Length: 110
Image (spheres, helix red, strand yellow):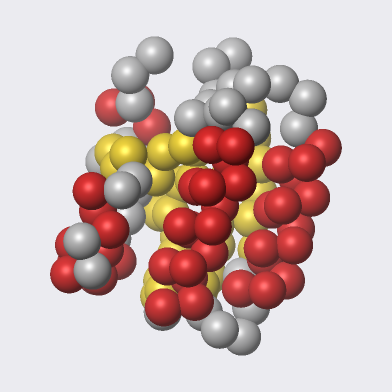
């Protein structure tokens, strides 16, 4: 699992690549937390999950913790491009109501 950061004039985009699971979530959490702590603007953070191939309960926990940490900074947090399996997992756990989820980055309101 890795992530890439890109930015446009409206938002910061964190694109996750690979499996989001017990074996890599701790390292990823530390890297993303460091990024958030060093972030010097209040642009919304968009988690692009186009290339996330699998997510277990550790990945769900990471997303909920990230959302809490990001909101503590007063920054908005969005999830985009979730595949059907991940979206179903969030729906079954009723967590889809706790995230702002969009089909694509262009669907996020300005």
